[in-house]
Length: 265
Image (cartoon, rainbow, N blue to C red; front, side, top):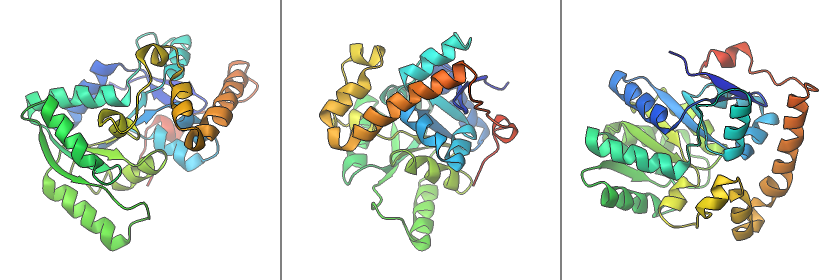
């Protein structure tokens, strides 16, 4: 049964909660279906406004997850009352706990040098018996074809069920759509900064700020040079676009190809 989606500026946000996300991942692993998961925030949606290929990548994901509270609130206003936020760190911990019970195998791809190993240590500390089959921190430059082939061979050789992809948006989404058919792992999950939060490389906003959608402000105060554009430009523009969509001043269609969730390579 297809999971309904809320149209947020032409990006289809799946109306899910954590349990639905976990059950969907279970099904993909059991049936060996190949999918990728995009954890989506306001910044992701705004990037899609100026990049049609990226928008189609998000709309072609097996799950386009509401990782930001504004997307949850807007989806509920559209009638999807069952939706709830699925944050990167929360999903990582929930999947880790279930994986320890079901013997799922994990590969960690991305993050700064040494950070994937820290995540592996944190996973196995929290969930004894969790199987981490490999880690790799790629260089910041684009990989050559030969290097990319070696990465594919390495991940496939690890026999992972789940690959955590921490390259940041939109790089990780482009990487996942280019590799979802080449990797034997059925599940690819783009977690972005989630790997840094879990490994304590970056501070998380207090829970009360997360609940009222002020996490962006906390992160901006801590990283103003890196996050000024998404905080001071993308967020106000998002509000203007939402007003245009709500007042029907502009159409934001998902498009027939996106509704069918075709993969775009």
